[in-house]
Amino acid sequence: MFKKVCLFAGNGNPTLANEIAHHLEIPLSKASVTRFSDGETWVEVKENVRGVDAYIIQPTSAPANDNLMELLIISDALRRASAASITAVIPYYGYGRQDRKVAPRTPITSKLVADLIVTAGVQRVLCMELHAGQIQGFFNIPVDNIFAMPVMLNDYLRKNFDSSAVFVSPDAGGVERARAYAKRMNGSLAIVDKRREKANVSEVMHVIGDIEGKDCILVDDLVDTAGTLTNAAKALKERGANRVVACCTHAVLSGPAIERLNNSVLDELITTNTIPQRPETKACAKIRALSVAPMFAEAIKRIHHSDSISSLFV
Image (cartoon, rainbow, N blue to C red; front, side, top):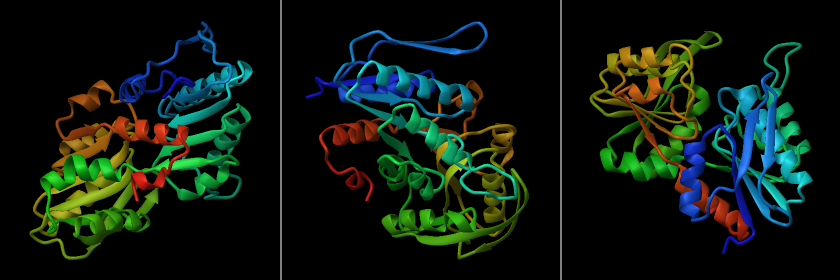
């Protein structure tokens, strides 16, 4: 069934790549991804890829620049080796938050990265939960943007909560995401109103919705420094919430994030393995990572057979 498919993995998340290959029941293809002593990336494809459909599994998470260059160079190597098609499987799209001009004379780096990926020879992109939907329009090639919601619902939420739970958006921009979860769980919706004074610093103002005495589930696409989540959890607890957990797809967890989570009133953070966990992340008792490998494997299978992708999460 997969005679003309090759899976390649960079150094961005080899564990997830191996899991995806396991679910597809095909081995990762042989390629050497190394660095010269001056830091330049070197890639050598170790097998014949002429006429095959190649999939590169590589998130562009930290170190973002290194992982992005690996993705571009692997794609260029496959294109020059006459691969029939090249699909970039990007579990986490780095630079996704720079999707618009927020001040004069600033870049739109999400668009720049999209242009680089296309120029390198990628013909299709498969990613998970882009920070902003318009990033799909930055590419002039097909983009399949899948969501972690089925994994969150089936592997955790439905086993631990009922319809009395309140799904909470930590800011006004995430209301649609929280509403989608609430709809599927028949739960109610609340919003945390916050004012961001500067980058990576947020101040919680008040909570919109009835949360007193109820279990609350904060829903976001990613958590970076964890300031928003921990402040939102504190506000919910102060207003009478029973248990407060958070669900986020991408656990960036940079800077003081782990310390903030450990010192917060948040009971648990449920995330996925789109970004590889650092040792300190694995050591944090409040973090639970769910695997999205089965979902990516199924999406790759459907792309290969020209089947519907949207039915995975709609």
